[in-house]
Image (cartoon, rainbow, N blue to C red; front, side):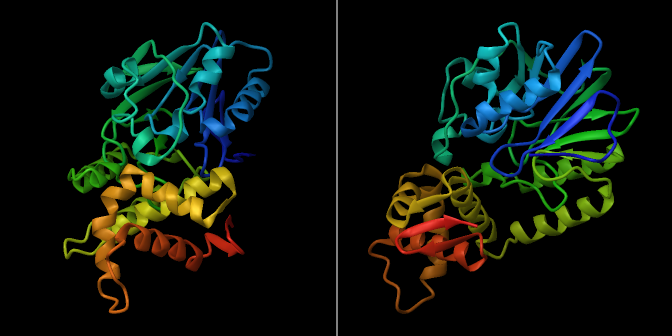
Amino acid sequence: MTRSKLEFPEGVTVLERGWLSSNNIVLLGPGHSAVVDSGYSSHQDLTLELIKQQLNGRPLDDLVNTHLHSDHCGGNAKLQGHYKQLQTHIPSGNSQAVTSWDIDKLTFKATGQTCPKFAYQHVLRANTSMKLGLHEWEIHCAPGHDPDSVVLFEPISKTLISADALWENGFGVVFPELEGIDAFEAVSETLTMCEKLNAKTIIPGHGRPFTNVKAAIERARTRLAYLSKKDGSPNHAIYAAKVLLKFHLLEHQKIEISAAKQWLLNMPYFQKLTPILKTILSTDKETTLDNQGEQVADWVIGVLCTVKAARIEGNMLVNQ
């Protein structure tokens, strides 16, 4: 974990966590404290300790989730268990799924990831604002990566908490596309919205905060054009498969290759991706498709090693 050296609005601290857990944004003001996003479940103990350090004995009043992917809300239950009066705010589109704890709609099952059950007290609605710490933050819809995601904008300092809608280099996997739902246009519209806000500082869901916003949006649009090619290229499917396996490897650091393959084969999103990814293998005359899932799983593991995001040591797949 690193603490960003950029200057933010008074009372705002960014805890940069990496890529397994989302960044945590701590917002403090007289008589009020809040945190935006709580990271992944395997880091929940560390998340609690980091936030306790920032609060220095104060209670945590509000927890805000920009969206409900497991790496952004996996620490919710831990924080709720420690801070009994904590008020949790989630995007309005997720309320029914959380109330019924539908892990299919919440995508925890589809991604092969975990998230302890949590409750919520309030929903976030677009075109409203809420006070977090010392400042009023506007709530804006940011569909694409997740259809119900929101971003938070502080208009005086022009600081944007962009979640996974905009990183310094790109944006998150467009998960609705894995369900067969057209969502690339929503990504483009969200980037346009971010551009119109004319933010000076971006606090992304992952990676370091940054100020060269125009260049980041240009890179994101270039990335979008590549991922959304309409010539049948499986670019986004390849990206998604690599990200999902890398996330699993970040959590466990090393796993048996056979276990990694089985995890992929059992993951609903990988099952959806397999028919798309098999088209790459079908161009290889030496490849048969009798066991296409296993062959695609082998191929994804190989790609992760080729780009040096993992390595093989004996029968183990090791994160790097």
